[in-house]
Length: 309
Ligand SMILES: O=C(O)C(=O)Cc1ccccc1
Image (cartoon, rainbow, N blue to C red; front, side):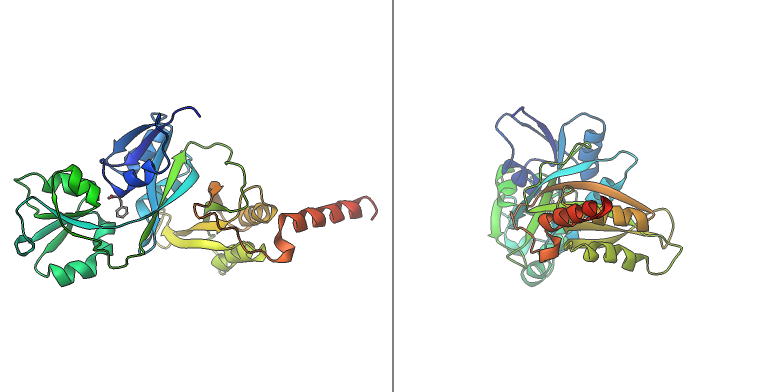
């Protein structure tokens, strides 16, 4: 396989970096970017082959910065792969700092949200400040002049920056998983595997009632199961919303094709953001009438009727 350049949400030591190391080849170039937006912009500008960014976590739901910027279809992008990473947070300090000294903690908003209870119980006097990334927090705290006493980050980020690990495994929910995606310029989706996911944004018609129901009818009516649905403002006007959706199935599956064409008919706009293999390889549970074979058989029957039965 030819080597690829990946821009990831950095700096080195972020959870995003660790998730990327699970899939990158030895020859690939991994380039840290300061933000999700900067990494996606670099794909749009053709400076890198792919961006690797967080898109969802099991406690907070979708990552708005990623979802919104992906959906901006003035310069379309496409998701080609997903990766799941169980995340473990560590409390890291400059050597010599003890827990009682900690007044100010720096971390990424997602890490702050996922360690809130632990911090309230174990560092009741500390103020948590949200910064650009967990690894960036470790870099900042490693500076002896830093205003912050501790970073919440991956153990590896603490170690890379010469910090001491005061506590590890401090997530409020030990099963927290974050989902990351590989994003490229538009290209035909990777082949269907039978256990795929499709990501799309459906813009509802604001001028009539029942728009959301119309979207759901298309999805449920074709036997497609959603794994995520979030409403996001379109940013065009107050009260104007779209729905960011992940659903089981591939663009090549007839039930997904019927869903997409149905959505195209009932929505003011539909942005297709990619079909790609599910990281957990879980195939959908389909009713008898919703399999690809059932669709092919029904199509053959219809053709037969058109030629006189
Ligand atoms: O800041 C990081 O390390 C990231 O990659 C974003 C993030 C933060 C917390 C959990 C998962 C991903």
